Image 1 (cartoon, helix red, strand yellow):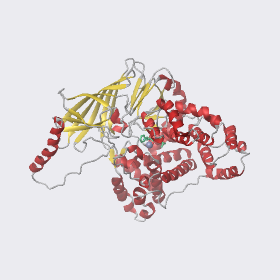
Image 2 (spheres, rainbow, N blue to C red):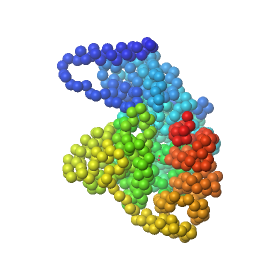
Image 3 (cartoon, protein in one colour):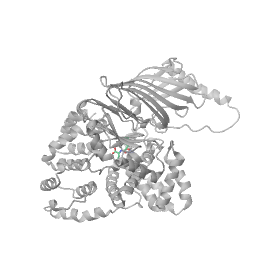
Image 4 (tube, helix red, strand yellow):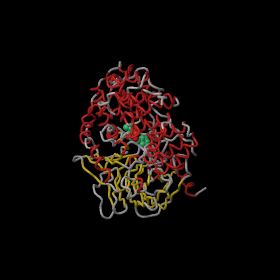
Length: 623
Ligand code: BES
Ligand code: ZN
């Protein structure tokens, strides 16, 4: 056995014993150790206070290298090691605050979780500086070639740290319940701009060295970096848009109302606490719709539709500035506290801007999706409180956390009234700002602040069934937006006869009426109906990617060949998982078959983020 491990074992077993015997007086039970199923970090013993990054980004080696320094303080005197999460990192050496070399040990890799990095520490308070390099297999990093960018001239890099990917580019205590402040010096090639989840530069400088200082404590999953040929255009004094120069004008036009959206959000949940709110429109490969990196939301360019119809996604990421970033789920089993709250807030922001009927269209479409997700998921995965032992936290990324979570909050709202609801949330954010929250703590807080006021509410809220039970409880909100009621007879008529498609008056339809209609007329089973729809609305070349994606899936199911070249192009360009998943799934069930789809995927895989590659490989049963 390695000496270092051996000495750790001695330390684990002996020191607590000696310290127990020496602690004389009180019989207080020790604080239960805080646990995180997905992190090796010993955060119940060590306070990880501050991170300093000194990193060089090399596009030639496709590697980030340098050091991560953790200022720490031990919480009890028994511990003399510090454990960080790592995955696929080359650890070169570790030194302390005085430059002394520290012994370290990388444990054997554990599936999904990577390797614990144990560092021997000699002081109760000090710092450890870990010198390291990322490998090409780092799951957080997507290195784009110039051809994969809008400008086609320079490469681009971005990170995606949620859920447990921060450890693949920074050795870190990578659990959502562990917060720290950070600063960073990032060296990038000259001519490029570096941006982080921190106050950001607005201009490219001449030497490529950028400094960041994030003074609010955040968890590791909110660490983010983007590097490329990026420009900035202000919206107002607090908000602005970053994008590649060729995309910047369109991105700014689409997002220019975000300044007032922040104000709307503030009227709902209290002051915005992160000073600036900027948006970064990324190249097409970005695997998500958006990621709520503090101060700088990362966005897919697929929401730039030209008519601002997909801005609810920005409302969603903005809402995370409260639910998620300010009050953070303590573990990934409490993920609904991040996402369910955020969807509810997203809809409230959307309602405040566009009115109730518009927001109810979103609720209604989401409700349909939720029902089909519940149908397809194992029953235990339909509880709000997840069970993730020995599972990757990304399995929780389903409609349950998002839509069942949000629906539960709407059920609460419908029971207690909006005024009471808003008062509750304002207090919730004020009481728990920059802290973590788990499901059990939420229940206690909710009982103390709401149920104690009126016991009758309990019956209609059925809190326990929502959180610890399957599916949708019997009492739940219902949605019938007027705009959809008007479409129902048209859908009905299409099932009888579809000669009149080109006569349907769609002049006041938004994206959501189209989606409702196209979902409502299924199953289509008619090539001529596909042709009529395409002729009427040019769906094969639709600018709105939500509509286009739905159309491409229908085209695969119906073997509608006129859409195939667009489909091929889409798969070469767009890396957003929400679109790729249903498309690859439909392809594997089409006449192309699983093998044919696997072959096609392999040609396209290079365009996708490592996280998206993993997901699609899973769908296509590729090892
Ligand atoms: N935080 C999520 C993205 C995420 C979750 C990444 C878990 C990795 C693991 C983000 O806020 C999100 O929910 N994005 C959605 C937006 C949609 C629900 C409006 C997306 O990307 O589609
Ligand atoms: Zn979210």
